[in-house]
Image 1: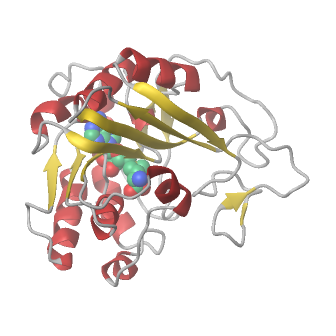
Image 2 (image 1 turned 30 degrees about the vertical axis):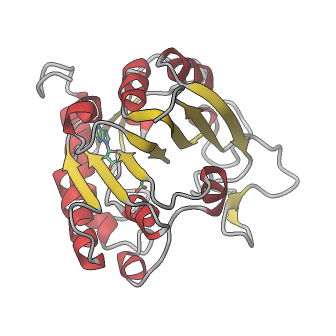
Length: 279
Ligand SMILES: C[S@@+](CC[C@H](N)C(=O)[O-])C[C@H]1O[C@@H](n2cnc3c(N)ncnc32)[C@H](O)[C@@H]1O
């Protein structure tokens, strides 16, 4: 990625927005850092089941935010984890959490970098798993380039695992999620002015402009394939880790769903793609 200012302003605007929201998130019950410090594991069980045993593995987490997911993989037995985010505020929180948990840099390392610069910025050249989770890729304009970077960080025989919100959710009405209001096929960016945050809608914020891109499922899968990875699965889920629509409520299993009588639409997807070859 070029320097700030030569990209139409998306990067600078998004960075200012994320940096401002980190302290809001760190103080929010949504992210509940105190519970995390006490031992909470934030990896959703369906992700853990799909990924399988990570004992002894090296894990790279792209767009790691405050590092809770990253560090949860370490808690689950990963030998080394590394998180990357372009927000210095987010990485400061992640490093503080790692230190609190007693992980040194050899066990858990966090770097400030744009995801497009990850190949040069990550501490190791290649990882057993490259992990990307919820609300990450829609901040990136070029999905092909993202896939190339992510794939370059997977060691032969290793895999990329993505758990994301389904791109259809950008098309649906905010209340019921059952009416299609916007085209699924959009170029970009979607430029929005949204004060507050999903973790604290009432928070007072000044950096409210965001630039996002809707990457269709076809574009994501095609980009991953073009980057040389072999798709092992693509699962679409009728549940979410986030109450994206007003009509959703938390079910007994902890996930958010629409009422049973509502039309079922895909809310999240998970993807696993393997790099051919042997370590
Ligand atoms: C929704 S959060 C990540 C989701 C994570 N699962 C969580 O909730 O903790 C998105 C993250 O992407 C980061 N980000 C956005 N654009 C980026 C870019 N171009 N390079 C690196 N990080 C970026 C933001 O700073 C933010 O921490």
